[in-house]
Length: 309
Ligand SMILES: Nc1ncnc2c1ncn2[C@@H]1O[C@H](COP(=O)(O)OP(=O)(O)O)[C@@H](O)[C@H]1O
Ligand SMILES: O=P(O)(O)OC[C@H]1O[C@](O)(COP(=O)(O)O)[C@@H](O)[C@@H]1O
Image (spheres, rainbow, N blue to C red):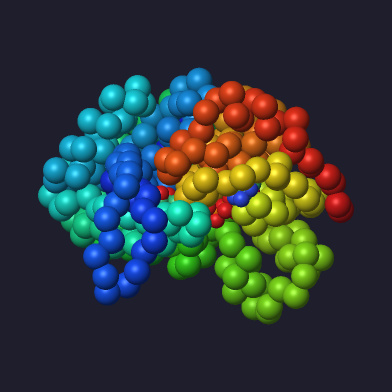
């Protein structure tokens, strides 16, 4: 089983409208509202590929109820820590030219006893999991070291750990040496303490991070695919060319593909192929963090994985 952890769960709302004009009234043509936040998107894309998954994290208020009911309706097992605060809404406004504007609420404040409940729940769930994937921002009240703490709990239960977050939560979380991380290029530069001029510099940087005890690091680059350092080997992956409809959640779909491949014990090249096909398939639907399984299957053959060092 794969367990996904979303500490800052959300209702992901997507508004499709002709144009977004600041300071004016805009009418929305189509609205999608889904259980979301990065880890929940990962769970949905894993489930859509027919692999057992369970979503956990913090959920509260009427938005939390919506998230849990939505997951149940979508057939995704879940077991959240109930919190006093209200889970957030994240808004993606898509105009007719495909330009996306995201508004992400900060989320609720988490109390000390709610964090304690999360530690206990995770220990139980991780004992049944092959892969535990932590994704997304930290809600208020949670210390920046919380991911490192939770990663330690999951590793102690024998799970392979993924971490997809940003900023200080990533830097501090990475101290616990998760198996897989997905920083962006700026974060890699910040880590290394120098700017990254070109792809070769990025490759060298990722390989150096490998040496610090981080075995698998992917930097994804939208339509350009991704670069991954894996135990001292480097892979350049080209994504299939498609007419993208909505790329929000593609990073999460990529993580889902990596998690599925890893849980199934596939070689890293095949994990990267599945991750990329899942990320690209996510761009083909109007919904965030959603793939058609036939799209993933069809795109697999169009992904090019090349070892470059
Ligand atoms: N426009 C696109 N065309 C084809 N594939 C895409 C496109 N956007 C994203 N992808 C796929 O999804 C993966 C993750 O997307 P990316 O936008 O880099 O993630 P994030 O959402 O974390 O920024 C990419 O590596 C690629 O496989
Ligand atoms: O937890 P964060 O970092 O605030 O991000 C939350 C948002 O990220 C998203 O998952 C999209 O992320 P990606 O496009 O990077 O996959 C939204 O669906 C979600 O609401």
